[in-house]
Length: 161
Image 1 (cartoon, rainbow, N blue to C red):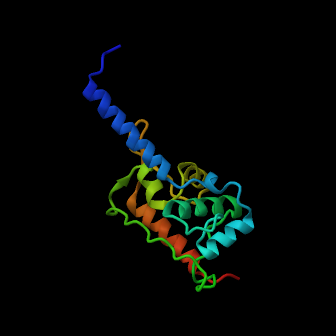
Image 2 (image 1 turned 90 degrees about the vertical axis):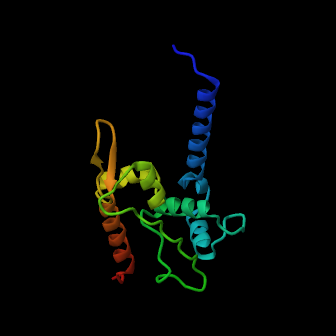
């Protein structure tokens, strides 16, 4: 076993701290695990958490994750709800150029979905499958993510029958 210098140990500790903070900022459906379906609907319509406070960006992501888990569908768009009560949808992050390979951590950030939700959707065929870019590495082409996002938007805007 090799010895680690204090500088190396500090660099590792800083790296691990940053990774932990990134994970803590990611949306997680368990955040609202005790909320009933009616609570989720009320939060979506009012933009306020169960405690009555305005939803933070992270809470909004957690609400979407929980909504997908409970209703097995994405929340309604502002077009489908009473616009006077609806929560303004967060601006979607910009995707990199079409030929860029996007790693899983970045896909989580760009979609707002958890890694396990993405894996479940890939298995179900509702999310583009990743490319093998190494022995253990995988990633998605940005153009595939853009196409998926456009498909969602098209489905969201399509009138229901």
